[in-house]
Image (cartoon, rainbow, N blue to C red):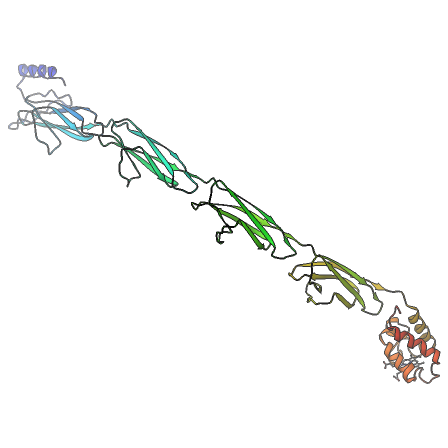
Length: 428
Ligand code: HEC
């Protein structure tokens, strides 16, 4: 309420009524007057206008009061002291309670705010830390105030310069503070820039030996040392030899300790060749044979079947018809295998045929049919082969067969003897 209006109001009140009968408060009409209390029925209206503070104590509050008698005094906050002036200056931003009291001691109050006009803002740029060295930088730019100082992170110390150097890779908070103490902050990242590049070449492992190599090449920095795999030890030479086949990680580290790595594979090259010479088994005899031929390395041993045992000889004899795998292993333990099939030779040899014909003429009257003598049936090829020694024993050496005679002639005995001496096989 303006001072003019207030005076006009008081004049009207004085003319029409007693001074305390009515209040000019805009907030509420006056209640009935009380008997002894001069403030009974009096409403003191208080309001305040403010000017904002700029992070320092340059705010103001101007209080306006009306109601009841005139002669107002003013104070700030409950604990303040009443003064004649209605203007309060040197105020920090914040919430206040303004009080006004008239000459009769009637008080009123109102809430008042001194706002902040702080418009400080800070931005920051950074340069990355190169090759693992703490050489990153941050440059801060602040606006909205004067007399700025700057610090890095909440625990830092304010400094005049807006440039921070020697920084490690990471996240930072940059603060700017103006002369009045107003702060602003922003987050900024110092990146990493590893310019070291690593490449690696390899040579293959031959025949399961440990003769692979890896050669590492690094660039983008100086003072390199090299290692193979994370658990390795850095060395001056970029060459690693005596390697087995497999996957490796090649590392290079520069003079300042900055690393980079690349994957490299040492592949295997097995030059061992294996082939088999196979001799068929003759009918009725498990006499198949495999001769293993290995090449491409040295110091070979040989085995038959994955579950076999390596031996020095490359010959496997007395084999039945069937499918086989032969293996050759060189002195370094490098294996190679080849398949072999043993077939049966079912073509009767002439010596066997002569014996069979002789037995058919002289013996099968007793040694054939459902119940052959001694259980031996000399019409069955494999019985002749299987019992060749017995036949020779009885018909040639002892001469008691055919039973009851006549004995075989020397020429007939020679037929048996010749076949037995040749090996007594179906194919002989
Ligand atoms: C007249 C019948 C008769 C004739 C022919 C005969 N055997 Fe025998 N053979 C027998 C009898 C019976 C036995 C069993 C008794 C014995 O071992 O002396 C036998 C046993 C054998 C045995 C022993 C078998 C064994 O498992 O011990 C042989 C080998 C044999 N004969 C070969 C011949 C030959 C070879 C001829 C022909 C050159 C022949 N036999 C002719 C009746 C005969």
